[in-house]
Length: 222
Picture (cartoon, one colour):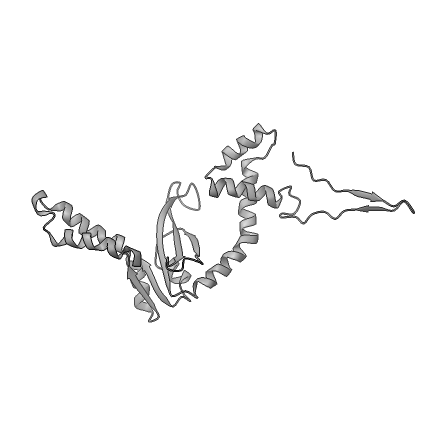
């Protein structure tokens, strides 16, 4: 149980009472405070501590904080407060000339589809040459079709470094102000597969092996 103390003062002259203002709510009629939610988020997203383990840790301190409440706080406060900052950073991305984009599948327990279906987390970040002002944004989507990067990058003008996924090139063909560049790591993969398919005595004399030896030199410019 969390207790919020608010002091009440009484005047010595006329017995008038004055109560301190209640701290601003993060969520109306909720006991969650900025410091409590910051602790929950730090444990979950920085230290990778799931909510059920945090619930157990609170119980060991004789605090009854349910994981469902923590999940509810996270969703509502992210939508109410962090979405504003997210939209601001999304606009700032358009000021850069080079971005990087990728995606990874995530299993979703249930969301208007059968249990265990693949959804996708898309990530967009500023190029690594901008060391002093990095921006990394994630965009959760139910699929990996072209409409998602098309919408996210609709105001971006410059170079976007990606893997070989075709939808990026589909979008590039639709616009003159967007260029899609390949990533050295993905380019290396095809040469590496070629070398592995060669007999052992011919690997190091092959052109693919020579290219692989040269590629790491260029990674720092990727």
